[in-house]
Amino acid sequence: MTKETIRCPWALRHPLETLYHDGEWGVPLHDDNKLFELLTLEGAQAGLSWLTVLRRRAEYRKAFLGFDPAKVARFGPREIAALLDNPGLIRNRGKLESTVGNARALLSIQAEHGSFNRFIWRFVGEPLHNAWETIEQVPAQSSQSQAMSKELKKRGFKFVGPTICYAFMQASGMVNDHLVSCYRYQDLRGKR
Image (cartoon, rainbow, N blue to C red):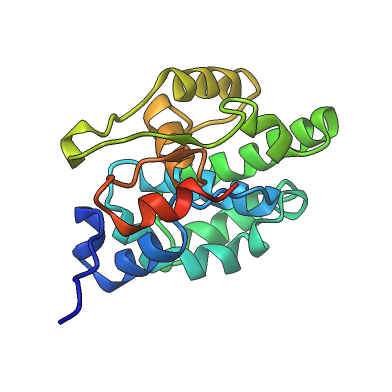
C-alpha cells in the first residue's frame, strides 16, 4: 500500500493544473523572459481562471515571441491587430496592449538595474515560506505585493495590482504558498 501524494486542493481540478503545480508553481525563478511571461499571464488571468490561461500559454509564447521583452517592445498597431485576431489568446485589447507597454517598462528596468530579476526579487530578498494549513488562510495580497504593485505602476506597468502581483510572487517562487500538507511545501523549502 502506497501513501497517497497530497497536493494543494486547487491542483486537483484538472491535469494541466496538476502538472503546473507539481513542476512550476512556487519554484524560484530568476530568468527575465520567464518572469516577464509570468507577469503577463497573471495579468491576462484577471477575471478568469488560471486553467483558461494554462490552456493558452503555448499560443501566448508563440504570439509574444518567447516573451523576449526587446522584441515585444517593438510591437505596433499591426502586431496588436494580429493579437486581437488570434483565437488562441485572451482577446482583451487592454491586456494585450499592456504586455507591449510592460515590455518597454521592463527594458527600462533592465537598463537601470542590470536585470528585471535583480529589481523584482528585491521585494522579498529570499523566498518567503508561509505555513498555511488551509486554502482559506492564503491571502490575496501582502505588504510586499502592495509595494511591488505601487513601484511597477510608477514605472508604467499595467495590470499589476497587488492581487496580480501576489499571484506572480506565488508563481515565481518569491512566496511558497503550498499548504504545509502538500508534498511540494517541504521540497521548495530547501530550494533557492
